[in-house]
Image (cartoon, rainbow, N blue to C red):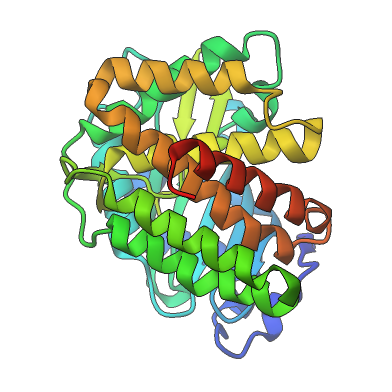
Length: 341
């Protein structure tokens, strides 16, 4: 039987990831699952790969592939799994991190419903690791609903739980690193918009001043890429996704990064940076309740720095480009309110 393969990106032609050709071949995928993931397959009986779909792709860097499996031993007769492949080599550390969380307080037995997807195994020939695809709706959509304030508070509890997990990180990220990203990206905006050069330079100087005001944080393992798309809600369960950038850093960065993304989403989709302010306040207040009042300045600072980063990010997407100047003005207003601009 022919297995449908949906590859709108044409990943099979990527010379930097030649193994993707086999990763799109249902027969090869089934063979590798049996070879490298026997523990997960144990008790499931005979499985078949029913469909293959490339979900996300960054040329010459990484690829996310969705596999639908069928088998009598599977709950409901089928399951969908996700394979994450990387050009520079198998990302064992992220897989092992997910294993640690799954086997700890983020697995199926957790009573608070805050979980991570189940890690399945690794397929070295594909430079790929696998996890189950969990059902649900992203917080991006649900924060807009009537109970968005309650969800925002729960998201604060979820990220705080990750910070308290004491999971070792193999890399770190500091305020200096956050500012360095801005110093790399905003000059690129100035190249596109030369008339904004002096404004962008003043913005960078103000960001440096803001960062310098914060005391040394208590370092924890942090997500570092935490925003509404990374939270999936399925009934009473809340799943944290995509730990590729997990590192040691300031927990306030995760809360601030989330807030900055919500503000940007609000400006772009609801025509006002204040449209979701009650959600932002709920998340910030709950996070500060859990971490202490001393974390508030850092949360606010990282929220502003995230908005500044979005000035650059908006230039990379056609649907966001019309909002670049509005974002720049908003960042200027926020930094003026801090007294740093």
